Length: 413
Image (cartoon, rainbow, N blue to C red; front, side, top):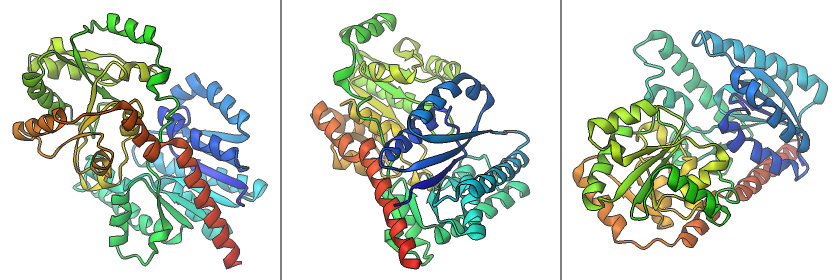
């Protein structure tokens, strides 16, 4: 069994992402006998605010956390500096601990894992988390009209091939992403690519544990009336999430369900949401409430349906929205768009909502009609979340991948 594992993450553990999509897996796997050294790149302000919490979690789970500072500016050069710093720290730790495996979360981390493999023969797991270079291009962060960004994009597309070929195993968040990689004809076996979606702590996202007094207090705080139908939106408002289209959908929804309000559970861009709602004369129908992680289940519980639209680009076929599992685990049906990872397949297979295929009035009307004619049972929706997104299943899937890498290394020896 692989016992001594180096885990490298360019995302910080003091970020919400690290706390939901890294630490829970490592805590679960540490209970199976693995010992982790965890290198992560932390944003200074979040590190100052949350480092004590993360240190406690790591200490309790025998995780040797080795935080480093993340640098944002200047673009490209700051990342190069971070990579050099990560590589130096990794080599120093390797000489002390002689890792059996490097678990690399994302492309930046995999640069280090690839280097450690080629220099010291340590196998690495390419936990790719999506088509990162193409995400940067599709988001406009790396405009290919700029020669520098074109060079960076081409560099990482070449490295992507190296990561796929040289890694001991690959994690894809979606079956759609796995199928796309196999179409690249790189000579790898389908068995090398393991699909593990962004998993969810279904014990945390559980309607049964939501305090009714808390939800009643929230209804009073947010002026939600007994006759109101609440649609919720959970998460960030940014590059990939289609605010204008969601508000346009809500306009059509209001024509059919006039006693409705749209609750944004988000810390992001409140002014932008308010401005967009005002332009559509629906400000009185919009509620914005940021929520800490411990508050999110109670806030979601206020809604009868949850909504999210994500830009359907090439890179998004490899994306697994965490919010989908969280919402399903709460027993709440979803209205979302097609063309993003396995999202629409999950909606169909688990009868967990309705799909928008076209971002126009006809497409919105069809989705609402599809939604209204279905009966959604919270218990069945939750069972679907447990079947597909449950954290314990994700931990077990990683355990099997580790075990297969160990078996393969023994055969090579």
